[in-house]
Image 1 (cartoon, rainbow, N blue to C red):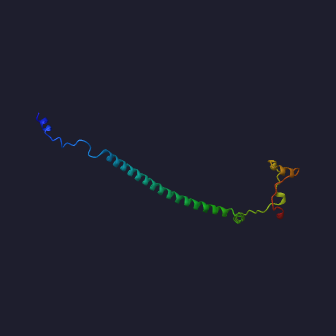
Image 2 (cartoon, one colour):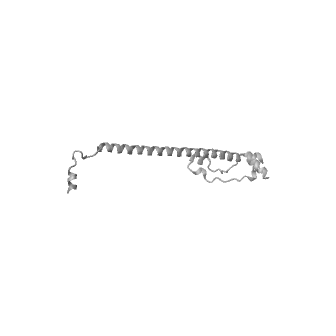
Image 3 (cartoon, rainbow, N blue to C red):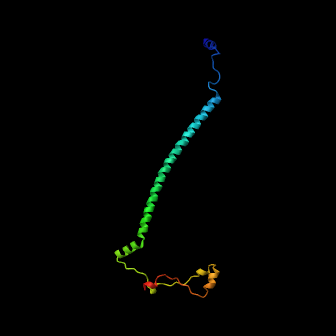
Length: 138
């Protein structure tokens, strides 16, 4: 029974009942902490995405430069001077076709596609595909 008496003798006024920190202040501190953490996370993600964008832009610039270089090479390969040089190096003799080598193709109804004024003007005429400049090389 003496144990219970010792408990009773304590001063009840010194006992703290209630919260040491007010609840609204604690809620404000927690919400501000959460906002700071969210801001820092968003900021770090933006920085990481910015670094990734810069690296991808560098890759895109390199690819564009390679594309332009390859396009220039292709243009040089397809030039008439280069084609003639390659043909002569391989011993291929080519020239313009003679009149007998030109194949004439009949018109396959191109003018019948709704162009009535051309149909009336060209009615009864035979149309052939022609190659310009063949007469001067015969």
